[in-house]
Image (cartoon, rainbow, N blue to C red; front, side, top):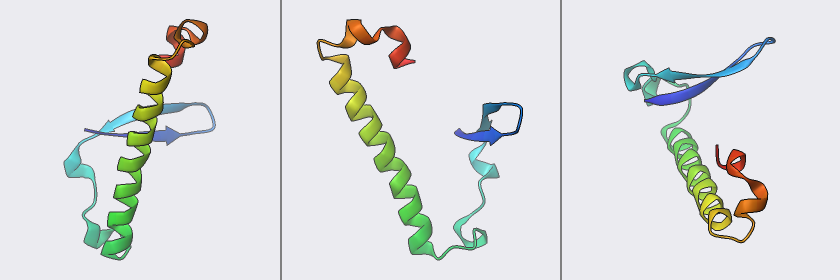
Length: 71
């Protein structure tokens, strides 16, 4: 499942989207290399986020930050 943001003037919420609802690269309007680079950027962003999460989780600051930091 892909999770996307729905942004309105009222609120911002997550919506799960089926992989079948994602348009194929040919209908995206982007060249294939740009489409793939965009996807790779998302993967790298998640990897960096998980790395920082692990660094903080195993640091002495975990009690200072509290459980809310990891939600």
